[in-house]
Structures are given as C-alpha cells and as structure tokens.
Length: 207
Image 1 (tube, rainbow, N blue to C red):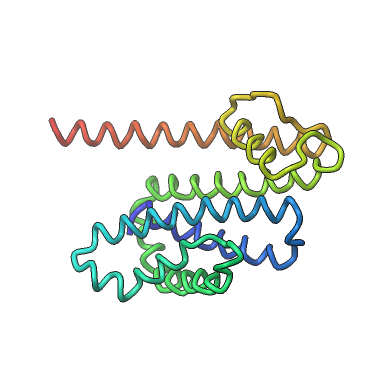
Image 2 (cartoon, rainbow, N blue to C red):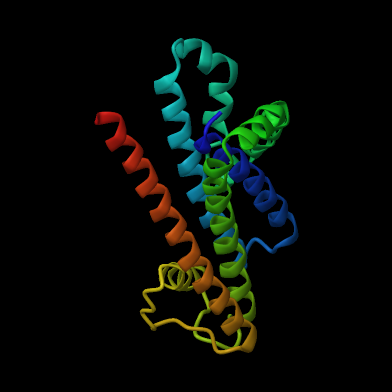
C-alpha cells in the first residue's frame, strides 16, 4: 500500500460516481460531454497505473491474468463503441473493499503521507464538481457555455493564473470561482510541501 494506491482507490470511487451521473443526464447536453472529458482524464490515470503496476510486478503474467486485465479494461474511456466495458469499472470497487483493512492500517501508520493522497482526491473532486456546476449555472446567461470553455475556466482558476477570457457572471458562479481559487492555493501549497519533504529525505539518504 502506498500514497499512489490510495489515490487510485479514491479516484476509482469517483469514476463510478461519474458513471452513475450519466444515467440522469441527457446524452446531447454539454454537461454530459464535460463528464466524459473528466472520465477520459481518469482513464489516462488508470492506464498509467496499470503500466506502473505491470512494470513493478515480479511475475508480470500472473499480475495480468489475476487483476491486470481488469485494470486495463477499466481504463477504457466511456465512448459509445465501448459502453459495455463500463461494467468492468464497477469491479474496481470490489478490489477496493478487499483492500479496506490495508488502507486503514496504512493511514494509521502513515498519516502525513495519507493526507497528500486525500488532498489530491479532494482537488480532483472539487475540480469536477465546480466545473460541472459553473457550466450548469452559466450556460444560459454567461460566457461559459460549452464543456471546453468550462474546462479552460477551471484550469485557469485552480492554477490561480486568472487569464480572464472566460469568467462567471452569476452570483453562484462567482462563489464557485472563489472556492476553487482557495482550493488551488491550498492544494499547490500541499504539493510543494510534499515535494520538499521527499527531496529532503532523498538528500538525507545520500548523505
């Protein structure tokens, strides 16, 4: 168990939540397209995790035939041609349930490291919720009317760059923007702290 395992476990739960949302959203809406974009990003993360797990496995064939094939299939995006593969994403939850005890023990022993994993999850969740909410409230009254514009707005906002070409005009949109800016500041501060700590440990080991 490691920080990356915690992140993948939490993101797997998030991906199931996104899949569930699609059953209640019209497939021709911009919000639907936005969620599929986020699912694509999650699938890229899952694919890199599969490659990493395969690379680290002592017996690569054993890993692939036990759980690796499931990890690979669940990293396929929600495109219409592969919708039937969505069911494999659900099986990730069963793997998570089996790993609950390991997760609890890891968190107890490595509280600081676990915090960074949860921060990544909170940031990703906040990004998805805020982007979806802004698109929902702004699409009819503001200048954020498409999934692509909402994604660009969220990236610029959470990185605190503030490019200014797309911005909310409703009160709710402005409140969401403020929350996302604060989330970005906190998350980047946490990430920098984590990198500094890891770098310091590596330097101490070499010395």
